[in-house]
Amino acid sequence: MLKWAYAVIAFLVLSGFTFINNDTLPVLESSRIVITSENLVGLKLTIDNESVIISQNDLVETPLQSGPKALEKVIVDVDVGTHSVIISDPIKPIFRVTLISRQGITKFLRLRR
View 1 (cartoon, one colour):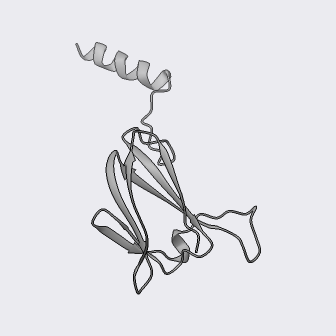
View 2 (cartoon, one colour):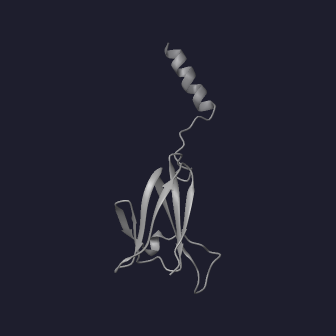
View 3 (cartoon, one colour):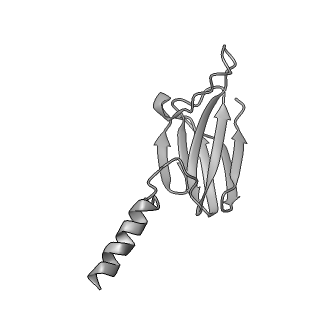
């Protein structure tokens, strides 16, 4: 019996068996929301009941765009389902929408200010 266990382990090692631990692989049970605007830094992003102040570190770099009208971009991974998205400045909400996200689908929001 022990010989069979060693044979199976040897087969797995020789055949290249490995665990995949890569965060860049797509998550099957989620979707994404991509938000773009001229100036996102400092705005409050609320999705359902979770909120965050968008900082420079949250932005996705877009090297092809530069200059005064360059768009800033934030990508948020969300679970499948219905989500309330609110973007607000320190005084009041400036954008509010309800999105229905499906598995593997990306929703794009363009905020014009």
